[in-house]
Structures are given as structure tokens and as C-alpha cells.
Amino acid sequence: MAIHARSKILPGVLALSLISGLCSAASAVRPEVGISPWGPKDEIGRLNLITAQSRAAIMARVSGAQAYDLAVDYFVGMPSWQAAGDPPYQMWMTHTPHGNVIADPMQVGEPMNQHVSYSGSAVSMYAHMGTHIDALNHFGLDGKIWNGFRADQHLGDRGWNVTGAEKLPPIIARGVLIDVAAAKGLEQLADSYRVTRADLQQALGKQKVALEKGDVVLIRTGRMRDYDNAQRYMANPPGLSLDAAKFLVEEGGAMVVGADNLSFETFPSEVEGNYLPLHTYLLAMQGAPIIELVNLEGLSRDRVYQFAFIGASLKLRGADAAPIRPLALPIH
Image (cartoon, rainbow, N blue to C red):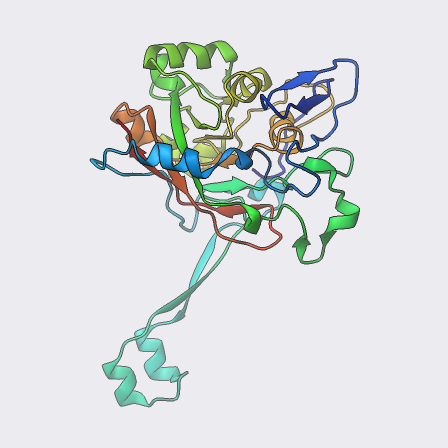
């Protein structure tokens, strides 16, 4: 998720409980970042819920019949946060077979360049483009991020020296699709629709799925159908309400949350005083990474609601996000 025109924040301090992973609010107190129950050096938050036992348990249930690629394509003109001043995706050729014949950059001579063709390319992009995962340093409160790490102590010209994207471990866990659009009989939720707690509960009931602690929970709004049309995809996207996000983490026990839009939340903000309340709540207060632009169309089409989620992001040192290519393997 990138900085963009959003709006406002909920009064309340939410602290993560060591045993339940839940949080409680003191409504009259200014929100503060969460302090990790996994200790003062923790940099991965709820990803600590991944254990050898949890990985083995979900992999033992994989059917092997199908594999769903949940990542999107990267291409020039793809959806991006250019309106917020962030760079678009760019790709250019650094070497082409014909160009090498003329320029001979490797100094091997024309006969060799005619015989051995060589193509090379380069890309430039913002970290929050395509299917990506937000690291816990992406958003904070009052100069601090998750676990009380301070920007003035840990953020330099080469990125963060704590909670960088390189710290995110490979994620192997149970994945759950909550197909809100399909549960409402829609191909896509309306512009700016704010998904509620009741919407999530209704969809889970129709799917006959219950959330479990440590799940990767992915919300389908249907927005991915417009991915190839960047202007349409970015215009007034549907997203989650803060209450819905609280339901996923505090009641459902979600470890990671994600959706098929580029913002996860919708706008304008529903909360006074914070233009991105879901990002600050999930990342800074709960230590729950967010995955955006997840392609959930295949899972929705085949009505696959539970699966082994497998994803490893690029180890971009000090970064606040990184591309990820997640896979969903249906389970028994």
C-alpha cells in the first residue's frame, strides 16, 4: 500500500495478547504502536505464529491436484500510485540481438553477435506495485513502528535497519479465501464499498469455513477483473472497514491479511484523525503484514476456500514492501 489521499483514526489503544493474539481497546486513549509479545527484538510480528508444526500440518493436507498462482503480471501501464508521486513500472531493453551487432558491447565481433543472440532488460518500480507484501515498517504512529522501533533511530538513507522486507520469512500456512463479492451474488463490489464484519461473517457462513489462528486470510472484492485497465482499477476501489479488519485479527486470529485491490482499505477514511486506519492498525498496532493485489479469480471460479498458502517475498534489505508470488494449493 502506498501513501495516497485517504483520511482519519479510531480513538483506542490496542495491545496484542501473548496467549490469544487478540487486542483490547481503551477508547479514550490515543492509539499507540503495538509492543510485541515475542520480545523487544521481534521484527516480524504475527509471522511468529508460523512453526515447524504448523507448516507440516498444512502441507500434509495438500491434495496436489491443482496449483493456483495468486500473483499478477507486471507491465508498463499497470496500476500504480502515481497520483501520490510514486514512480510507475518501467521496463526497457538493455541489449537486443540487432543492437549488439551494431554496438558490440561485449567486444566479441560481428560474426559472434550474428551467431549468438543476446537480449537483456531492466526494470524500475515502486516497492508497492503488483502482488506485494507490506513489511511492518510501512506505517507507524507518532514516529514509531511495530514493537516501538523509532524512525529517528532506525531509518537511514539505505532504508530501515529493523523490520525490513528481508526479515519476512517464507510464509507456509493455511490460506482462506473470503469471497465477499460472490457471497452477495456479484461479480464485483460497488465502487468505494466498505466491507463490514457482517459481510465477512455472511461469506464465511455460505462457504462453511471457520477462521483459525495463524491463517492467511484473503478477501475478494472482484476488483481484479479490472486489473488490465489501470484507470478503472484505481478509481474508488472497494475495501475493508476497520471493524472488519479487527474481526479478522482479534476474533479470527488471522496472521496475514490480503485482498485483490491496491489499497486494502477504501476511502475516504471512516476514522477521525487517521487517513489510513487499517494500515496503522494492522501493521503498527497488530504486527500483521498486508498482501495487496492478490489475484483471487481462479480460487473464486473453482470455489476453493481453503488451501495451503505458500509465498516468499524478495529480500529487499531495509525496504517497506517487496513483491511476492504466492501459490495456493488446495487441501483435503
